[in-house]
Amino acid sequence: MKRNYFFMAAILFVLLIGFSTSVNGANPVKLSSDDREKLSQALAKYDNFSTIWSEGLLPVLKIEPNETWGFIDKSGNEVIPCIYLYYDLGLFHEGLARVSINGKKCFVDKTGKEVISFHYASDFSEGLAYIYDGRFQGYVDKTGREVLPVTYTEAKPFYDGLALVRKGDLWGFIDKEGNEVIPFIYNYLSNRFSEGLGCVNKDGFFGFIDKAGKEVIPFIYDSASFFSDGLAVVVKNGLLGYIDKTGKEVIPLKYSNGDVFSEGLAWVMKNGKYGYIDKTGKEVIPFIFDYAYSFSEGLAMVRIGEDLGFIDKDGYFIGKGVVRKIF
Image (tube, rainbow, N blue to C red; front, side):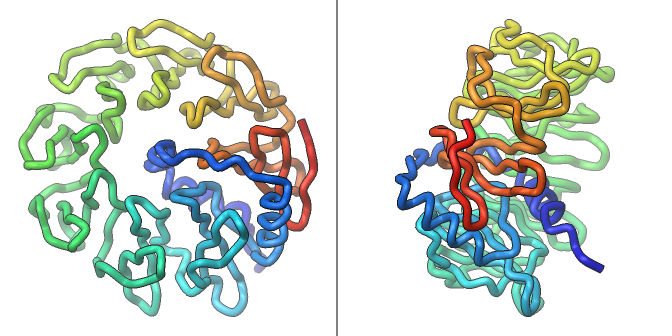
């Protein structure tokens, strides 16, 4: 059976989405015309690629002989060979990436050197990664040393100095010393604090609390995201828009789909097509895409018909062996 490799890339994106905006801190690199051509020719050598750049590298797939992944840079150089399995592949964060090879799972650095082995782990965030021993979860540092015990039912990465963890059926937040900061009283919490606020579900509606657990933005939304670039996605009555940290509606709830802001832009969906808006709500990249993802390091993956590739903010589409101006 022929595999749907666009679907695989989308699934990889979902696996990494918890970190999709954590790569925002990297400075976007503006590509020259020569850079675009080199990247285009490099993409043509691979059967598929991930949706997100991180720390200057992109996961890429070679189907033959064993469906393995590696990493290229923006000049198209294969800096880490395609030897890793799709399962448990991670982006580079804080200089390390999760990989799986020959039945072994480990972290590698940007030279491909194996650094830490694990049963299951997340990407690193704020110096720590959560691990899973088959039953419970805890946290290790970059030396592999256990810094918070493997005693949690479920754990999430650290953001803003706090991590979401679950004990039994209830969720709360801990700090890096393992202290309980937000008590374990919630049935659902957003997987991160961001810009000082956390998204919480209470009685079926979403709102925001601060790190003291105080309600800051009321529980009136059907769905909501974490804050990024000063704005959060909110949904009410099936329509999506954006609020600031005071709860003010900055971009009206009028879109059918959308994502958090990344590098000053957010993809949104209108009339079945995807485009990009800025933080004022101005539609700055036209609604011409059949699928779109967030910008990371100056590039965003898009699909136009059967064509899959990246766009930059200068309006160029960079696909497999093709570069063309599209807006």
